[in-house]
Length: 400
Ligand code: BGC
Image (cartoon, rainbow, N blue to C red):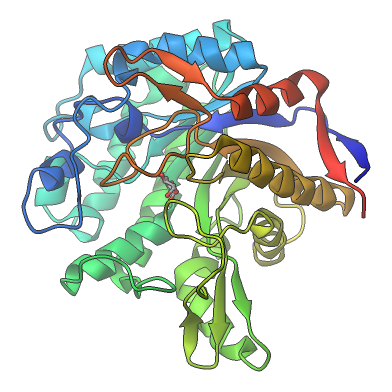
């Protein structure tokens, strides 16, 4: 197969993403830490030390910058910054400020996520996002992050995957454990409204901190594909799980596209992946084309001109060659989207490191592995291969 090369547009973000709870370790004030030590959940093992990135973030950034990446998306942890309601930790704010400065010093532009699934346990106990005053509490936390983000941060993500927050809330409210074999549980409507309100409040706070920061949020795209005749069923299924959150991003500076696989929908709803189809370690169908569909659907719903950034895309596998194959297919889609004139402004792989996949360490999404005893970082061949594109500033494009 012959390759053409598609140059990165000016300023294109090229990086990898992480989330605090999944890599830092010992996030003991968070709701997740409590859940991990509670019986009767789907959680198979607790996060404990994770990758110890709370202490080793310098090494992580050294490796990423050395590989050729120019951007790093990481999240800051509300549970550390506000460990008790109304009590903000200057030491933790200084910690995250050092990370921002450390990234900039290494030539990595930081994209900072303010909320990536975890909340302080005190916030959870008072009822989470749907409780009275929650929007104001979240906005106050965002305002308190000014010392971290006011300088040197080009992009801020307010809330990661609000649609998954609503899905998980719906599941918790109904007392369900685990996900159905296909598709997603019904999102909790009250949570949907609450996280949208929290996002809009956060956007205002970020703009007040520094109007030059480009602020947005990131949506989990499940790439719902209608079987013939199931178009209306698919649209109805998709709207509360995805489109409502993309619509809520209109007026933001960009939107994050996060995709891994697809969900096919028939007249009776989602169809489980057929036997014999290749699956990844998360049991999702191996489908590198997902990101192309996610970009095009997001552009359609968000409206013309909305900048798109792939903020997560990747595969859980122990076979690193399969990871390279997946990224090859995915980047081909990104290049095609660019050639078709979509406003794609960046690509950040999930994930920089093998990390805590919300209940288990087994699904390995990382470009970089690490020694379980010493925490020594071990970049995989896929990391070297992907990072190198940051130097050539071009994407591979398989011939049509
Ligand atoms: C999340 C990540 C997660 C990844 C793979 C996204 O839902 O933002 O935290 O690890 O997908 O499941």
